[in-house]
Image (cartoon, rainbow over the protein chains, first blue to last red):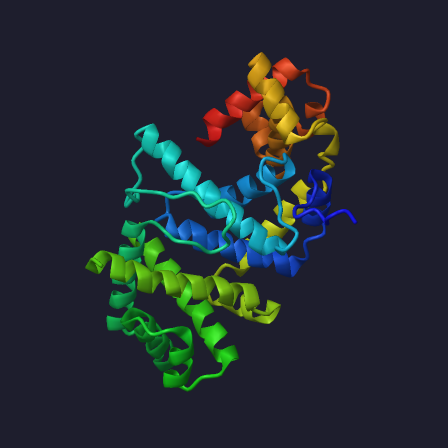
Amino acid sequence: MPKTPTHYTRAEAEQKLRELSNDEIDKATFYSEQVAALSRGAYDPRDLLNEACVRTLDGSRRWKRSLRGPEHLFGVMRSVQNSWLKRDKRAGVGHKRLVDSVESDEEAVVAEWPLEQMVELHEQAESLLASRKLDLVEKCVLSGFVEGLDPKAILESCRITANRYVDTLLSLSTKLSSDTGDKS
Amino acid sequence: MSTKQAKQGKMNVLLHEIGRAIEKATPEQVRAALEKSGLTERAEENRKRLRRALSVDYSADMTSPLVDRKAALTEFGQEDVGAYRVRLRFTLASDPAMEKVLGVTLDEVSDLTDDVVVEYYHKLREVIR
């Protein structure tokens, strides 16, 4: 029996993109904002999403069948961001707060971010904690991460449901992004 | 482990969790996050823009799989005209203002010869750099 292909063909990928629901497009937009924010404002979220679609449409980036639309686009946007950072670094194009090293990870949806970027993010998280921009639950969850607790322990120590946890992470990611936007 | 690496480890977990949260989030949760971040208007505009760009049929632009194209491009030193055509059409469809900037309309791209597509592609790269 022939094996099921692991990736969509180019034509299938084109069709899948066309079938994205509004909610999925919103999700991809949300992802593009997150990825752009973590590039310290070097790239426009719209350009990142455009490029992810173009690479999928021209077949240069294949779409794994196991991934849904927004998650596929998220992975591509991260690759795009990294390849643009490398390109600009080679060309000597300066970006404010440009990271020193970039990694390319073709497959991972969420993988490791460059060290300098992570450390800046950590510092940003600490300054957010010191500010009054967070509510109690957000503070509790973010402190848990800064202290190095695993998500399960955070859920227990903050006494929140899984649903509330997702809400809190979404709002934290938004606050981290807008804080980044202010600085870049 | 250095302090920097330790910080990286902790933040990796946070980002991983944020990624998973977005993945698991219901449409209502994503909508609420978009509203909180003031992105709702942009999201609406983005939907329209992407829908317009994705309504274009790109299938005729790519006649061979990437692996064959790459081989041909390496062997003959050619440019990937099919991919350039996709990029041009997607850009023009998603952002009609680019028609004026580049001096070509979306409808005209299909009739352009390969040489002219290559020229427009390089012009586009200069513009969006």
